[in-house]
View: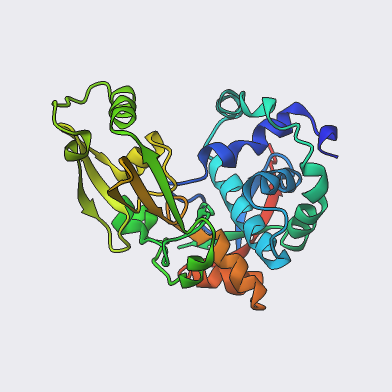
Length: 299
């Protein structure tokens, strides 16, 4: 039962929910295994993290994939944050952790964690975060292209055409001209808008090779596409802007930022008989799955 766990553990569990989408640099060097200092057995946090991250009815091999990703991010982010910093970040999470639905899926998550115990993603000898999204646009994004940094070179673009079968593959978000202008003014109070139609003042300036928007001009300001989609609560920043039935439609392809693992695509591979290691190798071809050697702090 989730209720058995102490508050401190619950707070640490929230790390991935708050920090997961993107990481910066790795942790420590290693050869056959990655060596980290032990503060607590972090494995006990992972089933709850999985309950938050992935549908409970997904294939067992896909749950194992998510367990490896979650463990990787848990080690990556907690090694970079002090305990006090984490407690501040996770204050709101404590209010939401008591969720009855965990009881139905917790044992499946616990088994996935047990089978993959100690396994993390390693790139160039360092632990890297387990980055994922819900549904891709048919292929995942290249990290260096999307994020403009060598630290993201472990995120390569791979084919995920099976995602086209997902219910979330295409989704329209609708605004009236008035509600869209109001939303833009609320989210970007420093942007200067004219009396022209708001659709003439939202201009897509740059896309990446998978058609996700890198830069979009809003009034007199150019902003990142991912920022824009979060502020308007769009399902992805791979979208077109259309006038539809006297409303403005943002027609989005995929769900999430499109980087790393596609959960839907990975689950489809699991249905085809792929193992969790094979699925990881598809979405992270330049990354290795290794075991952590955990050492107690000694003085």
